[in-house]
Image 1 (cartoon, one colour):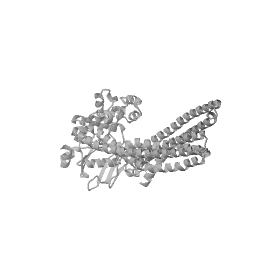
Image 2: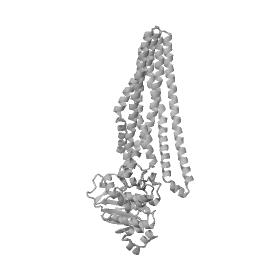
Image 3: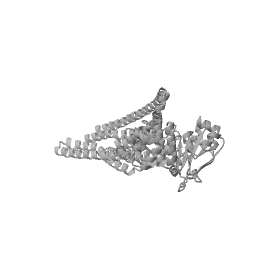
Image 4: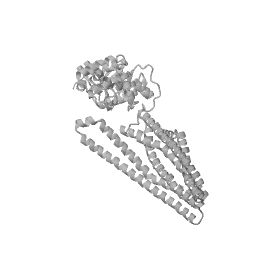
Amino acid sequence: MRSGEQSGRDVLTRSVRGQARRVGLGAALGCVHQLGEALVPVLIGVVIDQAVAGQDAGRLALWLVVLAVMYVALSWSFRLGARAGERGAEEAAHTLRLAIVRRVLDARGGAEEGRLPGELANVATEDAKRVGAVNMALMSGIWAVAGITASAVWLLLTSVPLGLIVLLGTPVLLWLGHLLSKPLERRSEAEQDRAAHASGVAADLVAGLRVLKGLGAQQAAVERYRRTSRASLAATLRAARAESWQTGLVLALTGGFIALIALVGGRLALDGSLTLGQLVSAVGLALFLLGPLETFAWVNAELAQGRASAARVAEVLAAQPAVVGGQDPVPDPVRGELRLRGVRLGGPDGVDLDLTAGRLTGIAVTDPACAEALLRCLGRETDPESGSVELDGVPLTRLDPAGLRAAVLVAAHDAVLFDGSLAANVTPEAEAEARSGPAEIAEADGAAEGTDPRTERAMAAAHADEVARSLPHGAATGVGEGGRSLSGGQRQRVLLARALRAGPPVLVVHDPTTAVDAVTEARIAEGLREIRRGRTTVVVTNSPALLAVADRVVLLDGGRVGAEGTHAELVQADATYRTAVLA
């Protein structure tokens, strides 16, 4: 776990350091801006002493031109510096988002454990943005230091007491601001946790909206979200109160500090130690200091929130993989022979099972949990409690997970469709293009529809071509988020077509026809057998139509192999099989 945490921290550090050049440029321009800002009160004091007090119109005009040039330089330096800082912040956030997405999509899994999808989305958006904003905060802090330093130097040259007040008082203010930011950091972390949980619950409820309506459980769902939302609101209000207290107290301390400078400056002017122009400059610099000191308060708040978000991002990046090890390449070519030896699937005994290469094997179960455990083991989403699973004689634990995913595709019955066209969901290439933006969707859809024989065969085998013909724009019709515009049976056919279109050496499908009618199911069974002829295919289902076309059927009863044979043989000879499949 320690190495995972270190890796997470390294990614965070690189995301900030990666923008060092851009932030450095912004900081340099910002320092120029701050030095110019600090110089303005000094120039005004000079104008008062040399032009106004002496009633010299020529010098007054000259100094006004100098001030005009100064303000033009101030405007451009601020614009360019702020632009560099903002870009650095956005680039760092973008880098973090990519790192989080890569970790979530890592073939080893593990990042999603214990987290709702909405929570992960919140980490990849809001938390990444807050961490990226640390770049802008650091740059602004450098600006503020430059401004305070310039003011202190001039005040020291003008009056040692005024300069010492600034030099000694500023570190004290910064230290107090840091102490005041601690409660904000704690409450900001709680706020993000609650907000992420609320987002996760909302996404979960929206995804299951149809089921909730069918069960008449809308009110219970609304009440659940109301409680979650109220908890998130309470955490947000606590964080807002902490931020308001921190900002208010820092401003009060800053105001007292500036008042002290003005008071000392006024007394020095009264006893003749300062000229009128120098007094005006001192008061102007004291007012100017309000900006850098307020910036420090903002920087403290940003760093507090950034630290809280960084901890959440690091948790995701450092999440332990669900499966470990595995560096060997997948056998080339892949014959597709799967073998289970002593694999426990929830029962007391281990399962010994050989899935012959190039054949269609049906697996019926008496316990759905056993099917889920089998699928997770075959797809190596998890490793079995005991025993081993092998592909072409090589244990899955030795194979690279990413390569294994390409060789063995496990198509779960509850997989989701993406927001896009039917064609884009079936054809991976078109789907990837469609993700890039609205302008590419039509092009990707047109490229995918009816022009790819491989896609056409997959859609015909799954009878998804009938679904396409029933839609207003054929396969180019959008299916909505999660495929909500399709019926359950239509979604299943599109999902099966997507799995068949992928054409992996080994395909494992789980209950692909539970929502289609008997006639369509029989046609799909024949299409599945035909398109997968000669390649290893495993169908985990209790559907008689699908089991009837299998070369061999295995019954898993109580986490062990209960019977083997053809569908017809098992129907005749095994009562448990008849109950599981025909009841």
